[in-house]
Image 1 (tube, rainbow, N blue to C red):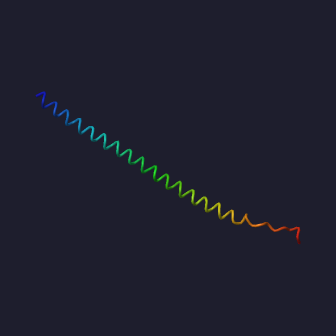
Image 2: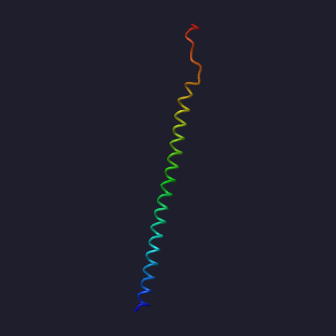
Image 3: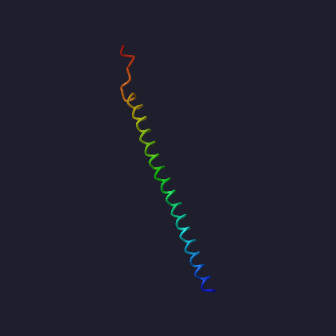
Length: 70
């Protein structure tokens, strides 16, 4: 009887460890996916912001007209 209980205990321990590993890997995968998506979003925001600032800067780079030359 004790041998059967030991086998059942080992089987349950193996199932418990495999479920724990699966949950741990799932949590790691979700976290890694979130970080990749956040990085892509940050790079996209950076590119859009740079484009906006570049467009704004185009008008400011020109020499202002001097009204005193009239």
